[in-house]
Each structure stands twice: as structure tokens, then as C-alpha cells.
Image (cartoon, rainbow, N blue to C red):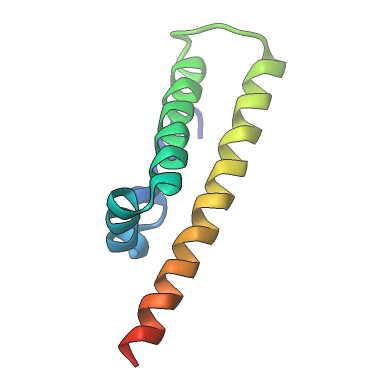
Length: 88
């Protein structure tokens, strides 16, 4: 859907606690999370007509956003698995 937010907390609500903990305790995650958030807002502005770069640029930004999301998701899954193992 055009202009739809893809922020991680709404996309991955089951990882809300892990997102919060990693943002505080993992500098790499915090940097990637910030980069993802900025990229998501840029895509939303483009799709909303606020910014009007080329379609190729928009496609590139969407691919970058997806790559960041995949990387962040992998970090979230690893963190949740570590917490689950520690609790056993």
C-alpha cells in the first residue's frame, strides 16, 4: 500500500521488547534501526508525492529498506532465542 508505514514495532509487534532492549544495549542495532526508520520516512514522503525523485531511486530505497529490515529481523530473532534459552 502506498504511503503505508513499515516501522518495525508495527511490523513485528511480537518483538517489541527485543526492539527496545537492542536499541538501548546494541549500538549496531540502534544505528541500523535509525537508518531503517529514516529510510521508511523517506519512502513514505516519496509515495505521498512530497518528494518526487525517479522511480528507479524509489525502487532502490525500497530495496535498501527491505535489506535493513531483514538484517534487523535476524538480530531480533537471535536476541529472542538467546533470552529464551537463558530462561530455561
